[in-house]
Length: 188
Ligand code: FE
Image (tube, rainbow, N blue to C red; front, side):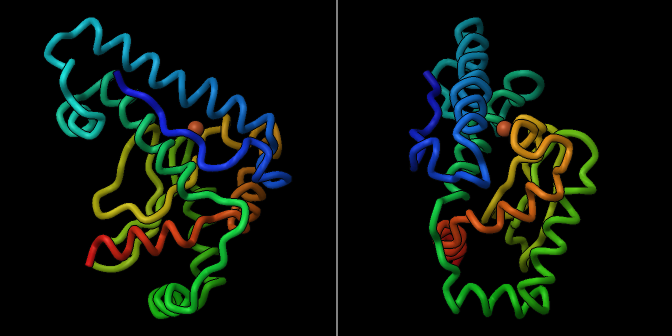
């Protein structure tokens, strides 16, 4: 049985940037919904029964892949956020070296997220250097994921309506930079 992670903070912890109402629907209904759907699909197919979430993502296609990937990416998304994290000097330097400045990094990240047509995800990955990549639906990019932001409308519509750009700009205040650094450390 595949389960979602426990939220690492209360549902109102990211207010006002992400409301408790959005967190409720997003985590309880959407994220757990993908896990429920995945477990139904596994129940119908004995071949899938002893596979881990990552094994399902690597070996399956279609609805099994989509629901498994959505469970995994949302786990990674919740961990990418936190109410209070400060970027260390080391990480700031790394990002400045690669993007020129922190502002430029944020600008490119927001642009990639805004320009992703339809539903998807905006990532910072490490693949021979930092890369900002937007993917569609439940696609996971090549490289080591360091950070992900949900671009599906369910992530922001209650709070920002159609303004995905505003959501992305605001979300920078609640990124878990410690998590990003931890993910970078695991590459080396
Ligand atoms: Fe989502």
